[in-house]
Image (cartoon, rainbow, N blue to C red):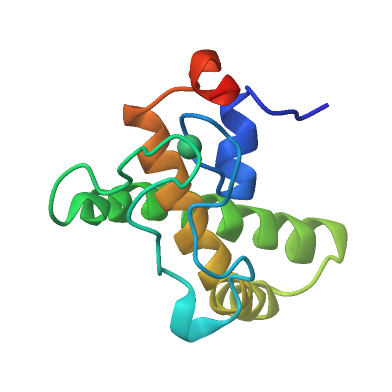
Length: 127
Ligand SMILES: [Zn+2]
């Protein structure tokens, strides 16, 4: 369903937003906490510069707010509505979810942020 060429592919897998041929991150696993936010300077396939300007990824903090809310709502729905837990338990589950998924939330928001500014370019794939 999700294949190369769709924005969703780059957002979910952290692939280069222009050619979707390789990961932007130096380490693929987001839970290697020291390397969660380490991004290559350029795409080795198409040469796209990921940091278009200094501190480009500061803007992803706005996105991470929305992504965090989405995770919190999902945690609330699962614990409060599906498992019919108390409000306190639902609150604790939200906090735990946000802590556990923090590396994923940070990467997702960076991927969404860079995909606001760059789009898939088919001609770059063939190079
Ligand atoms: Zn690329």
